[in-house]
Image 1: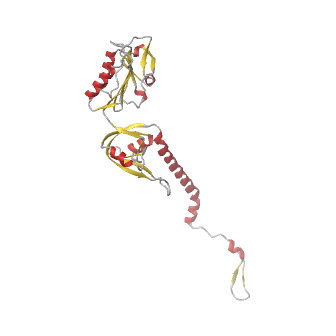
Image 2: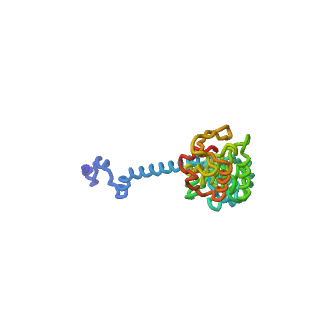
Image 3: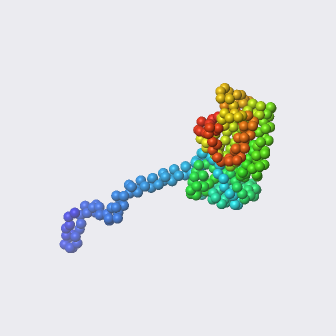
Length: 295
């Protein structure tokens, strides 16, 4: 403390100048805040990094691992999405209300001039949406964000070479007719789709066909190839030049089958398209996908 003295007999005590520089004692709350402030800044920084990471995953995750998701659309209406900050541009889109996937946003190719027309063209019913990882997982499964569709199309139970069919019988008849027509100069592939299931037969009636099927075409490990040695199957050795869309492909003879055996394989697929075909007639595994001739 500074010295004090009587100021000319007035009885007033004068405090020395050194007292003015003594720090005031901090309150308990202030001392606690001061001690914790480094941790508070660390927590704020960590929260910001987590937020930034979540934004990156949400935005860029929509462009990776794009798969098909089936949803039942109830209604569609034009919408406007804001950029989120003052002065940022708004974008036109279509908001689709679904009964099983929540609301879905679509904006590819949508403008303020055509959004009403696009929304009006989407009638209630089953649709297939192309969605990236973040929209499927964070949007459809977890319902934490509104999923964004990269593309959409009306869902049909059976599709044969790109044509939709409302009944199994009509689709089967069309598939068998298309298969038998693959001969001579008219060769190539028969492709039958049922939801995520897919059947492929490539070749011609005179040379033979290579057959593949999958109950989930998006899963490369679940492809199966027909390679049995029963009636109508190929020989156990050698290769065959199988006609494909752009020429021929050299295929192991055991994988090339007669028209009758291929017809039977098509019938098996229509009987249960979501089943994994049984061994030993079919071989299934992660190496089979590489042997496909229809891509």
